[in-house]
Length: 325
Ligand code: PMV
Image (cartoon, rainbow, N blue to C red; front, side, top):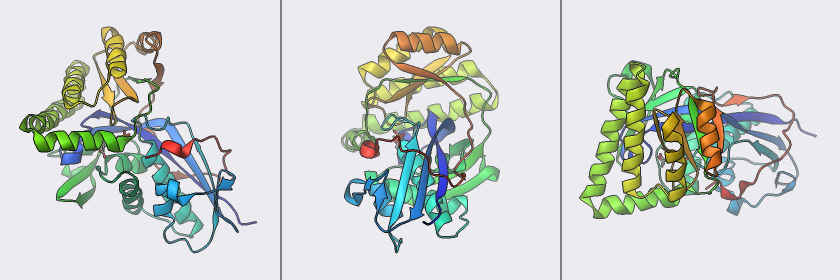
């Protein structure tokens, strides 16, 4: 039997800037303390978690294995909820790209992994920014298109007339609580919805511009360690995203539940369901308030390590891969 090659990557949450980042506006993102682990080995048949793999239903696998000249077994495990705005599909792509590189005997740099993960995301969901792929590969904290931060540049990526310059960002010493509505909401329909809105309405385009401004104010607040100002920006951002049509009543309910004990709260990721985050000094109270309104809460440890190789033993399969797009 061939030996296993195992890699993992973290999920992410967006402090400010989702959706507007697709149009080249700034964003602030932290890696989350939840990971996807992926093992791969040479084999006689292609399998995923012990079953024959249907590449047609697994676009990330199809893209990332495009150069593979032999069959392989894949085993995948995740503690990142899928379709919940926590970057599960980018984390899967980053971990799989690294595991496949290891099997090929390569030692890839982060830039290679970001390109692979971003292209896998595009193959699966059609459009979007390299924000998730960058956060899941690099880990820690990243900024996108932040002026005056060029000395911390990681990479610049251009696609379809847009450019994203990704920089390393210090992880703020702040406490965030995540609340999951439990509603699965894939990314692509939300991104398409915003695109259609911006095409037919100047007002929507102005909202995108305004989210960019709010994100820059939020970045200033992080640099000054000003939790109150950052919280205000987060709530403003949530309102702007709601106007864009990507919030929902369940997200609003959890944001409202968190606010009495928080500096600010907002949806995170593509919205339409999935998760919200709250910035707080009272995480237990916020978690209890979220749970009392039907959400699932956990206190987030931010700044997790990026994509990395793990011990060679395969992880046990635990994962529903049906909604990674
Ligand atoms: O919901 P997620 O974790 O896939 O995050 C999507 C973030 C967007 O800004 C809405 C899209 C993108 O590609 O940047």
